[in-house]
Length: 500
Image: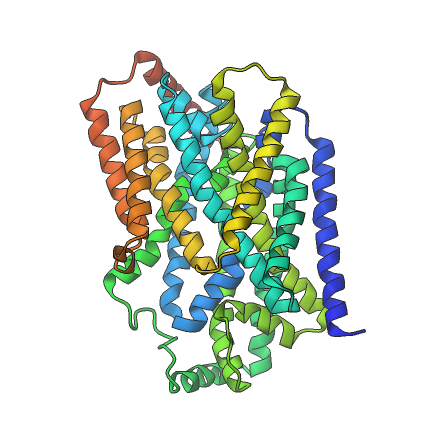
């Protein structure tokens, strides 16, 4: 049997497993929007943690990050460091309060509906604006996954880039369309485990193959003599703003709807403690594996006297040369897992924004079945638009992810934090801060200023400041709003105090 046949068997088996999980989730999903979009708030800590991690990291973890390390060295690891710190803070300070408050605030099942219910916004401007922001930035984010899928099949099987987009998009769309939130979450767990195993196996086997750290270091230094970057330095060639920009990716966690929605779906706020331990452990191991893969890739490729046309395929290259084709196929499936887990989660959140936050507010009566059907139509719409954008390969995976990550972090991050920890926040303060953060991130990211400082930093800072200033200049929230804030805070604190 040829190597391509072995790899194809592994990939087909993986895709079939994902479809099977999606079907099982479909059988468990009731015909109501709460179940389709939030899984009935019954996620265990382990499921929530692995799902959040897998939907967070995407193809960036197995392709974007190793590729960046391969090109520039450890200076690119500041992104991983910042993300790990940001994820820990997010689990520690946002997860328990958001889980408690979204239930207190009229059982909100989306971030836009939470903002509206939390601040008693009767104008609907806050909900509509945040729903539009989700659709715009998630379309780019989903597109990054499509790009990663096309690149994957092109680099691994020699398929046409467009064919790769259709395969990845089609299978992901199928299990998300019918399985809903549970389908996306359950597949995330399987995909997260597969990603973990792959990111341990590839660098460990490559380390042994090259004979340990000594030969690897020599190989990296030899590559650098031919013009490569100083790979073993965390600061070489980087300015202070470059390092700040990379580490600042961690700020984005507070505003990522596809991640924090997992907090909302947990069984109780106290589950955040176990979820944090599981999630951060998974993240440290996988991020370290990705960084080491990029470094070892420099030495291995140089030792073979080869060059990589696309640095973002270094993980794919190592998996194919180090393992039996069947094992290589399973490792390649981990790349697909990373890509598809993120796409599915983002499609669900995009669909919820379209239906729950933009269509239902028209007041037209709909049955629960109709709402779910509209949710599925929203999934399909976003997927098609994202695929059309992905056909234009002008941006790298990391560029697309970075742009969308900054948009969400700047628009929603400060508002989420202020909503949970500041009772004086007003609807106009939240709306102003959200729009300023989104506009600054968008404009900055599309200007030459993006080369000096990551757009998330000015967007997050200015959005937060505007939200605070406008809130102080507008009438204070009503007694009902303050009472709800006190109740949600009490419930979150009480539950955390008895957590193990």
